[in-house]
Amino acid sequence: MSRVGARFSQVALKRALRSVSDAGIPLDRAEIDPDAKIVLVFGGQQQQTVEDRRWEEGTLDAEDAL
Picture 1 (cartoon, rainbow, N blue to C red):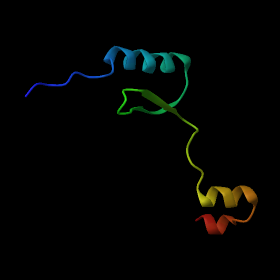
Picture 2: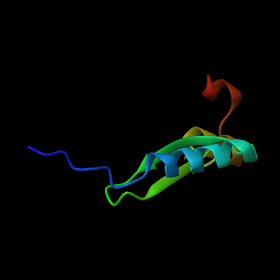
Picture 3: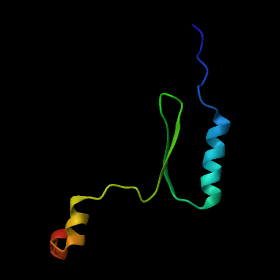
Picture 4: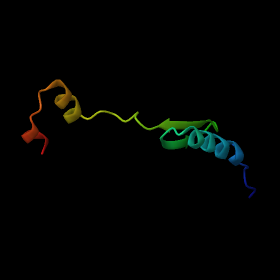
């Protein structure tokens, strides 16, 4: 059984990660989808929790957050 070669270049992934690091951008994770597309997910794109939204709206008391 023959091995199928990688459809993405390891060099391309390293280059993308190094560029993000050099720019000082916080990287959350890197993904490679089945089509060999490199997807970089940056920090700060986290989903907001229900408690976070309620706190910002002022409907969550400090005692409720504990």
